[in-house]
Length: 71
Image 1 (cartoon, rainbow, N blue to C red):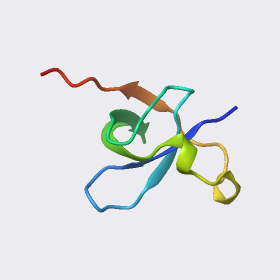
Image 2 (cartoon, rainbow, N blue to C red; image 1 turned 60 degrees about the horizontal axis):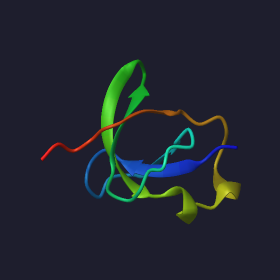
Image 3 (tube, rainbow, N blue to C red; image 1 turned 60 degrees about the vertical axis):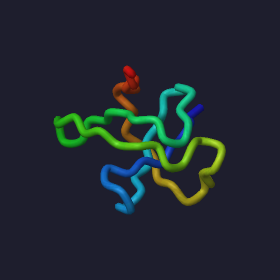
């Protein structure tokens, strides 16, 4: 089963949808995805429980890495 998330690459930018690969990602988490062979960092703005599946097209690109914040 696909678990979708919405991320933004820039504040107030367009929301892009990705497959979270069943990772437990929450609002505000920083993640890395690969687009066109290049890694890009983004922020989760729509967790999987806030997305309507019917309006999205498959297949979706997967999340590559969840970044951890080190204090």
